[in-house]
Image (cartoon, rainbow, N blue to C red; front, side, top):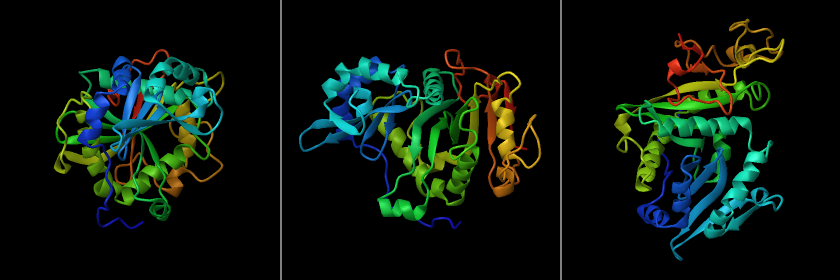
Length: 328
């Protein structure tokens, strides 16, 4: 793959008029009242309000009317498929109904997303954590659909975190919960390929490092307590890649998620792997991503903690995990 040579006119963030209006709205009051369970995601001139890392609403500000437009999945309103606009006041009034449906929905609000949300919230509420999570469900920006199609890149990163001290380390994090989705079309191979392509195509130096600045600036304009100044390009180091696995437990006579993952990663059994994939491994198709001499490598963190008992409050502090695999 050939790296991009210049930065296209892509930006991410909201302007001060938007942020000021939002802080004066019922939507901000809702966020303040539930900030122990809600996450704000900064997008291209709009915000996503996440509960369990699923979007309650896409929020746009209409400058011509001075009003907000909220868009929500009809499912959460009990109205079937598709999406609809919802008045901000109605969104606030129906918050409990919406979140109850999200809690009860086992297919749309998965354990993995709940765990993802819990990790981010615990980390960001911990003043002593070494990291601050600035985004969830990150998708790279494109100017239009043809450009996205040409790029052939549709990766979604679960979490982006920055270290609190300068120069800021950047952590791109993929989360797994239990043995679900380690194999298959959305499994470990796809995520490694996405991370590797992101790095090889130069998307970090040409896009993400600029987007990080806009994300942090926008969060601070919204009075979100980001514990550092808005970073400049020179303050941001190249990204590090992490795979976090929670519920690293085995059912009777079965493999742990770590053992299962190893079967897809390596050519030969490692990490106590009991069975190798019948398809080509990540090591064969891309590289051994546990070796620093390769073009792409990652850190793997494993914990036996499960939903209802997650206590990790410094998201990639290796001392808070039961098992780690550092690149060598």
